[in-house]
Image (tube, rainbow, N blue to C red):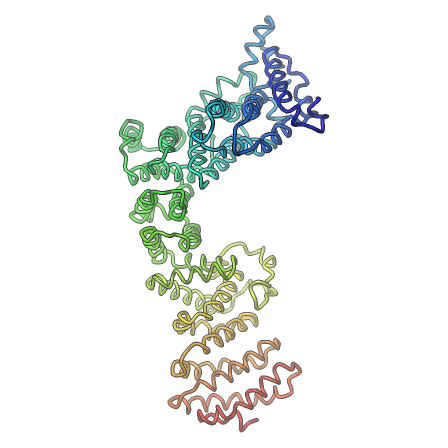
Length: 628
């Protein structure tokens, strides 16, 4: 109480932790926990412990604060609730000493009261306070000894925490704990990685023996307190397996802990996952000393047999991410894991969009030549088998900003086979999207010509990439056009624009005004970068598609269409003069109607087109000037 009421908490923090520990421990031994939950809530015990851990210096172990915090938390989790004590008294009218013995078997009351909703923040503070400390070699002898004692207290507390979770929440709580520890395994400091893997190694044996261990501490609970391995579902399991394989074969200090954690997971999978007769042989292989000699490939294949499809995808993502992770020194490990994927893509590549997005995010950041080649090989495989997913992934990356897309296309430019495949599929998707009229059932949304100003919240009712069989939804289709605008600004992409001409022609016929506006911008960007001889034949084919745009209700589209027409006329070479003259004649009357356009920009564009008569005469297309 002195600590709670004091403004100078540093003076009383040691006594506070020690007193709270003694109080909880004594109450548990004597069976006098009535009102303990109210005391903890009134004094904000959990919040104060969390605050003390967060304020402890991370560069040294100078006091027993961490150790006292761990053992106090352990006692809090073991303290039985009044309801559980009621069960104890009903179960035995014997002497108080008997009640005390029984109460030791009845954990977890304050979890449902004082600790509810605070577990994650409390454990996060515990992990940060201990795992981020300097290595033992950097500590003085007395500090290293205290650190070892604190780490053991942390492990004991973690076991108590896991075994104390109610049956209804054990999976979610385990998920949160493993996610926190996995984040620490990605630290740049080796000692932090080793400690995090070690704590995973402490927890994984509990999974396979959960029902047995739970039964030994579940006195006074109802049947819902019994949890078997089949009842435990941790979505992060794939990431966990992938990360542990990386450390198991990385020849780091964490290899030993990772090995034992993987061994425990195999036992858990064998008990909790469906299996056939062939699994018995696999089980015998991985549960003997031969597990020590399994190659990276064999280990990856063995675990893949037990993992769900989504978990196998997470293993792939971990391997890809490890290629760019400087803390994973041995790149041969993730490379060998990806070899298994490439050799059996039908089994492993069950979520193409997720895998493609991971490749696109990580490929520009991989620094080793061998790593780039391996991931590019996987990407080429994905492009050949799931080209639509690759294109959609590229489009979605546009939402991350220009720099990400720019860097990615720079990377793809060095792999012509992949780039050509992606461009072909990109053009095919666009063409198919607008070639099957009409697109019934789609809604009309307000979309800005610029991606940064587009109101994406308007698309919340269309969460899926595909609106129906073979058609993209409105969001993705419009996003693809935005990406095409950006690609058209690049010289190397402009040279490949012919692949997109059929789809752009179709959009100019049946697309919305927003979509037509995008296409006009693309065409203008391309014309600036191609040689006149290349543009000339394209120009003749485009004129007939541009003229109807002069009647658009969108003034910006009318203006850009006039500017595009002017650019097309300037691009005609002698071999196409006769064809262009015939096409331009059909544009004369629509142009005259726009001389006095209400929108000044349109009239100005018309005037500029008129003043370019010299260019038209030189190309033999003076029809426009004569009409003016």
